[in-house]
Each structure stands twice: as C-alpha cells, then as structure tokens.
Length: 332
Image (cartoon, rainbow, N blue to C red):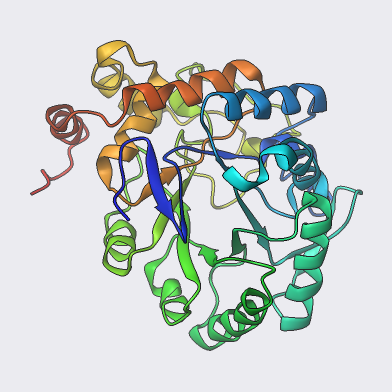
C-alpha cells in the first residue's frame, strides 16, 4: 500500500496518518498506592473530543484494557460504534486489573488469559473484532513472545482480531514477533527530542506500522509548561516512574528539555503550525511508517491535534535544521 501524508497503512487497511491515544480519558488507575492515569476525567468532554476527532478525519484510536481499568475502552466503544467500519481500533492486553475499580494487580501473557482479555475488550468496545491487538508487556524473551504470537494467531483465525503487535522500545524484543503472520505494528516512544532510528529502520524493513506513543513528550512539547511547574500527585507524570523521561521524579518538566524545545520552536512553528502540530509533522517527516498517537482530554486538544493533518510533514530543510540545533548527526 502507498502512504500519503494523510493516510498510512496499518495492517490490512489504510487509516488516518494521525491516531488518537486514549490513555488519558480512562481516568485514575494504577497499582496500590500509585497513579498510572492522568487525573480525573470528564466523560462528556471525552466523548465530545472523540466525536470531533472523527469529524476532522481521525480514524485510528489506540487504547488499552487497563486504562481506567476498562473505562477508556468503554468510552471509545460508545463513540465509534456508528462509524465502526471506517475506524481502526487498537487496544492492548497483558496488564491484569480489577475491572471498574482502578486497581492494577499484575501481568499475565498466558494463552488462557489473552483469550479472556480479548473477550472482555470486545465486550467493552462493543465490537466483534479488534483491528490491532497489542501486547502491553513488551520486554518478553523471544520464546515467550513466540508463544504469545501463537495465541494471537488462534484469535486471528477465529476473526476476533485482524492483526497484532507489541508495545516496546527495544528492537531486540521485537525479534520474537517477526515470524507472526499477523504482526502489523510496533508501538514505541518517538518524538522530536527522542528519536528512535533503530526501531524506525526495523519497522520500515519489515513493513510494520510504527505507532508512536509520547509524540508530544507527554505534553511537554505543547509548550505550556514553565520551569519549576509541578504536576499534581494523581498525574502519572508526577509518579516518579523509571520510564519517565521528560519529567523528573517530582513531576516537574526537565530544564534541559525545555531548553531544547526553545531552540527548535521556530522550526516547528513555521508555516502557521502550533508547536503541537509541528511536533507531529516532525514525526511524519521522520519515516513513512509512522502514525503518532497523541493523547487528549478536551475538544480543543482534539482540534489542535487533528489540525496537524492539514499541514503534513515538516519540510526537509527544517528537519535538517532541527537536527543541527539539537546536535544530532545529519541524515543521509
């Protein structure tokens, strides 16, 4: 399939080059005593934002069963039901939880659990198939990953899922997925301040979609944060989790990240783009495999994100200038 700046191939279908990440609209959840959500949510606002995204041409929605311990899937399902045939739904499995309680309990990638999780996701999403079913527990040994692939192939053979992928940032942990006939994607971190050249090369080589989480560095690339500003305790960005990169353990944006953003602001906002739209345009220019999935909680955020589609990829000369300003080697 040939991709354009507005659509990208994802498995057996083309979808909008922009997806919407539905983590934030799930509401509070996490392990005991920890926050893995983005604070309280307004379901009416979430529904309105999703509907607006559809109106603006967004047809890819990425969620997970654990987001809000089922709540995100329910919200997504309620909105896309009337547009199901033109929408790509990507969800995830592997984190265990008590549905509706906000409590995460562990991890499980056994074949029996995967089947139960798939059945529960189909129920919450109100659909008869999942377009992209992703393993949320990415750093699996090759043999375990191959067992997961076998379980997913059974589901694909039954028509319950159309394709599958893995969410992971390390290329070595993709190896066990490459033999799966239904492997269509890798979800990994990518933004203008966190390039992923090896993962992008792998996706391009094997014809996999690159689903890009943290395309806005968990909101830092919106430009709304000031030095020393601290996020509330119920926000995952203030959790001190070891995988956080743009925010420190106290929930403050890292000064060096704000400085880097200031250095490239002019390049990203050229041509009438907002910072958000420039950051998304950088990802499209980075590789034809990319589908960024920025998060949202409001209609205004949905409109700004979707507005990036009208601008398309950042021009090549600005891409080179951004690399120079960030001290990165020029690309061939």
